[in-house]
Amino acid sequence: MRSLRGSVLLSVWTVGTLTVTFFLSLGFPQVFQEIPSYAIEDLTMRILKGGSPIGFKLAYFGTLLLVAGQFYTLRKAMRRVPRIGIGSRSAWLRGHCYLDIAGTILLMIHSGFPLSFRYANPFPYIKPTWGIVGLAGVQGFAAWVVLAVLISGLLGEQLRRNPLRLHLIKPWLKIHIVLTCLLFVFGIIHLFIVLWFKYVSAG
Ligand code: HEM
Ligand code: HEM
Image 1 (tube, rainbow, N blue to C red):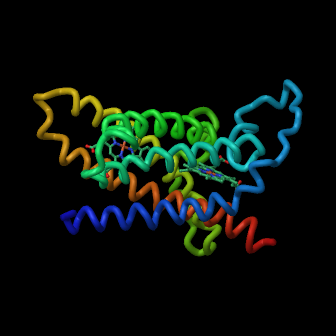
Image 2 (cartoon, protein in one colour):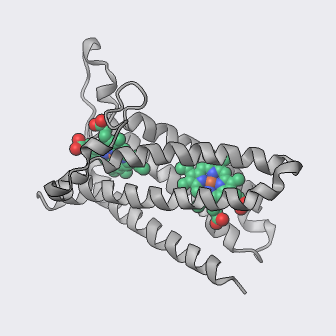
């Protein structure tokens, strides 16, 4: 029988993934926003980041890739499913790594990383007295956390390959999962601000 901890993690995963999917469905019409033709002098990082037509698409597909990569968690939970049919666990883990590396790269460009990263220090952008808009700095935290999860993933892959370091896998996985939870929290607040608050309630 699955442990209580495993069930809690799976429930958190399900709620987080469904919430992100809900927000992505709200942003879906904007994915088709036309990309204007830019003059050569306009070609700066600004056209690739944030809510620009290209920046929005990068964020959308980057997040879709991260969500797709998270399906490894479901595969891992299906311990008794035979390898034939849905693929082995290690193949899904490879998919998790590649999808998340690709998704993170798109999200870092969307964030303006590294040359146009306005939220490198997110703290000045947190202004609780401004209400929900005062949480804009959260997108900076989200960007740092995506980068941290990516680095932690690459580190975990190295630990898994080194028999002398296998004892570090359990504590490492805890950190990797806590970072993922933080990403869900910051990412969902960001999505709420940019999709629900800006585009839905503003009409
Ligand atoms: C974990 C995923 C994400 C991270 C780390 C992230 C990060 C950021 C950052 C750092 C900015 C500020 C860029 C700047 O102007 O300097 C930003 C802006 C923006 N993001 Fe994201 N983003 C993520 C996902 C998304 C998604 C999925 C969408 C929409 C589908 C989105 C839509 C936007 C929009 C519309 C803006 C412009 C906001 C404004 O100008 O007020 N982001 N994002
Ligand atoms: C934003 C990116 C990432 C997120 C949000 C993320 C999230 C997660 C989560 C939630 C788990 C736990 C799965 C479970 O136990 O059910 C996990 C496991 C793991 N991830 Fe990532 N990950 C990311 C990137 C990466 C990358 C890029 C790599 C590899 C280069 C990687 C390698 C691993 C490994 C080795 C495990 C442990 C597999 C196991 O022992 O079952 N992750 N990841």
